[in-house]
Length: 253
Image 1 (cartoon, rainbow, N blue to C red):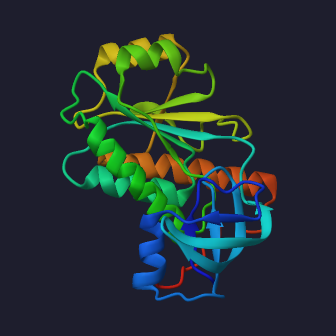
Image 2 (image 1 turned 180 degrees about the vertical axis):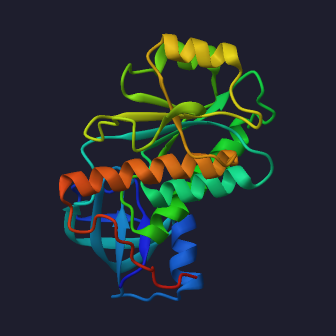
């Protein structure tokens, strides 16, 4: 299968120039030549088959042969609002959330938060999202928002009945009535969990607690578990042919 490259400028024009960064990977790492074909995607759900037709000062020139809309896009959106784990665990969380199909990831600060990533860190992680999307054949990039405070989240991000909080006091996943046909938001707390006051505030705003089992999970484990459960359950209910199945990707450079 042709390699995939990120081309946010993909539109209706018959030709475009690949960015210098993507050009370096295409020509230096993969040693592509004139006439080779590849898949490009714009990060908004459209991808295309393109052929290398020339070079210019800005990068490789591509001729667009065929466009298509990603048929795997879900009609509902899954958002994960999560406290940020220490070290490179957040990098791993961002990468795997992209692979799973999370639509939006909100880095959250709470009373017990320890890590607050700056804009430079988040910009670097947005490049991680691009690379993960190329690998997993995703055509719509996951949105990584700026850091959001607990107060701001309560004021702007809660949809009553469609926002869930991971908490040991909640009902189990299978006992909870989670409408996977709606846009859903899942809240994941920091190490030590949400404070009693935060839980009280969230419940008062319409958030429903859901338990993820008897074991205490790390931030990134809980975030990926709820996202994976919601996405797979949606696919099964909607009758998608690939629901519940996974394909091992080809090795990448």
